[in-house]
Length: 143
Image (cartoon, rainbow, N blue to C red; front, top):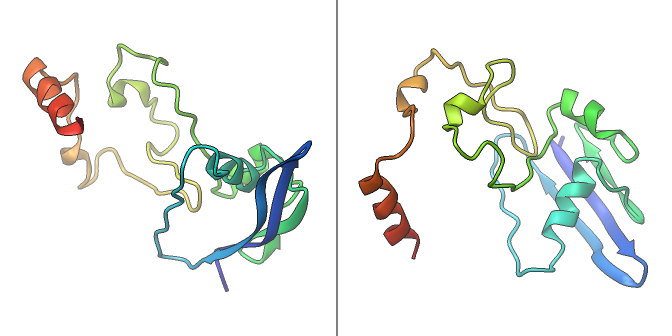
């Protein structure tokens, strides 16, 4: 049984084919990436999987249940969610300050990853902002 299966998935916006006859499957315990240039349909695919968009054709199966037409809030209860890349939200807060403790701090498209803030991974988190030397090093590393 595949955790996620996409079969003959298509999404059209007027005459634009954002996703065209896409099929793949993801087995439990595996990690996959979606890569491609701007305009290749990556965001549209995630919006289809998470219920934000409905497919023009094809279907999406999660744990052998068809999830086409399932609202995003119900998909989130099943462990399927997404985040939006808006870097200006809560700009002056650290990652730990943004997390209110009610939900796991890591949510991916696919299965939700449970993280105990007091467990063994908690020591890997650094609270507070980066020092200016850390920020400068990061900028150099990203260039």
